[in-house]
Amino acid sequence: LSIVTASYNSERYIAKFIKNIKIELLKITDNYEIIIVDDNSIDNSTLEIKKEISSDNKIKLIELSKNSGLHKSLLTGIEYSNGDIIYTTDIDLQVKANYLIIFYEKLIQNKFDHIYGVYLNDSSKNLFHYIFKNIFIFLFKFFLSNKKIIKKSSTMIFNQNFKNHLMKFKEKEFTIS
Image (cartoon, rainbow, N blue to C red; front, side):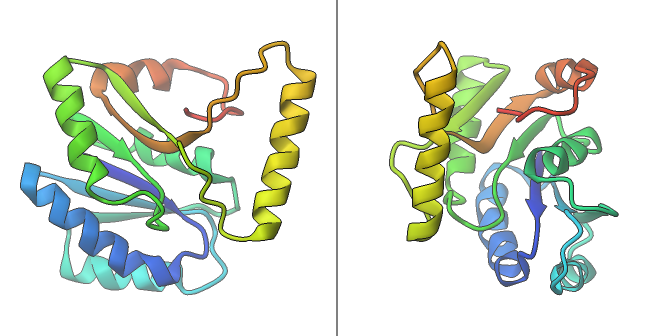
């Protein structure tokens, strides 16, 4: 089982993310890897990740030389993941770690290739973020013929079959969800 997450200036979340995700991981398997892709952070994120690696060799760090954004970072981590099943999620703990088990069980029980999360409630971090996110959604709806917008999260789980198809996709300018 591979956990893939992206970090950009996430120093304050790293230790808690790893602690919480490992609690859930160990309910499923002890055969896992946690891949953190650092998206060229300017804080001490990489030092914090390396500190975690020193106590757990199942944690891996990929450092990007330039800021590439969330989805390219996740795609990089997915590409280098070794698990039969890959779970992606945000490092900032907006999605609770126990969703790993919920997604995992659904994937296995239903023999799905891919499951992704959808935000049901707006969880904007602050008023500024809320306003600009809604302006973006309004403009998005205005210019597209399909007016239905689903707020997909970057929390997903999928198997090797899905990963193999994703890696064949040559376009790199997209959101994974």
